[in-house]
Amino acid sequence: MKNSRFLKIFSINIPLFALLLSCSNNVNSPDLKDYVSSIDISESFNILNFNDIHLSTVSDLDEQCIYIERLIASPRSLNLLSNEKSNVDLIVLNGDTFLGADQTVVSRFLEFIDSFEIPFAYTYGNHDFEGLYNSSFIEEVLNNCHYSMLLNPKDDVYGNSNYVINLTSGEQIRWQLYFFDSNSYYLGGYDVIHDDQIEWYKQQIRLANNLGPEIDGSRDDLIPSLAFFHIPFEEFEEAWANQDKQLYGVDGENYWYMGDGKVAHGYKDNDLFETMSNFRSTRAVICAHDHMNLANFLHCDEDSTFPINLIYGMKTGDELYHHSDLMGATLLTLDGASSNFDVKFIRANYEGEVGIIDINSFKTGIFHE
Image (cartoon, rainbow, N blue to C red):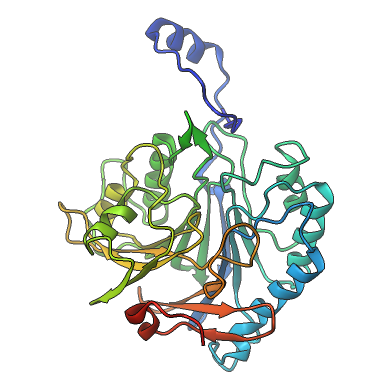
C-alpha cells in the first residue's frame, strides 16, 4: 500500500500474520506504462534542477519567486542553451520544496512554477509532508497544474513519486528519466528506497528496452537514463571516502565540496546502486538533502566496470541552513544522439548576480566571485 510517511516505531515479524494480511489485501497492479509519460527531445535536452527550497509560512514568497524566476532565466542569460531554444526543457523540484508550509504557500508556489509553461517534475523529500495540509494536498495541486509531470498510480509500490519520463524522437526513446520517492524517516534515521521500488525500476528498464523477465542486466546497448531522488544512498559516502573525505578537491573526473562534513544517507544500504551498475542504463544519480554538499563523483561498484556519476545538486535559495556562496541550480544537458551529458552548477545570489562555478573553485574551495 502507499506509504503513510509516518515514523515507523515497530515492526511485526510473524510469518502467519503476514500471510493472512497479504491474503486479505486487494493488490493494485497498474500497467507499467501508467507510470510513463514522454517529452520530445531534439539535439539536446536541458534540465534545470532545484533542491531544498524549503518554503514555509514565514518565507517571503514574493522574494523567493523572484529568485526562482532569475534562476529559470539564467541558462539563457549565461548562453548555456543552443540558439534555437528559448528556455530549458524540464524543471525538476528534487525534494524538500516545502517545510512548514500551508496550503496557500504550496498552491501559490506550484502555480507560479506552472506559469512558466515548462514541464516540471516533482519528487518528495523527507520534509514535504511536514506542513499544514493533509498528505494528499501537494499531489492534488500538482494534478491541477497543466505542466506537472508527476504520475502516482494507485498501487502497492512504496512511496508517492515513482515515475518515468521518456525523452523521445519520433518513435525512438533517446533517454529515460527516473524519479523515485526516497521516503522520509525510519526509527530516528532517514529511510531508503525500498526493495519493491528497485524491482519497479528493473521492470521499467526491461519494458523500455524490450528485455524479457529473465534478463537481469549486463547489456551495453540499453537506453541511457538519469535518476532523481532526494536522500542519497550510501555509495555517495563511499565515493567521498575514496577521496579520503577531504573537504574539497578535484581528482580526475571527480570534483566535490562537502560542506556538510557528512553524507546523510538512509539508515541502511540497499541494492539500488548495484542494480543500476548491473543494468548499465543509468548514467547519473542526482540527489539533494545535504545543503552544503556539492559534488560530481564518478563511482563504480567493485564488482562492475560501469561507472555512474553521483551528483549532489546545488541547494536552491537561502531557506534553512546554507552556504551563502553555494546557492542556485544545477543544469544537466543531455545529448539527444548519444549517452553523453554535461553538468553545470549555476550560482546565484539575491542581488541578481549569476554565474557558473568552474573547476578551479573545487580545487581551492573558494566559491565567491
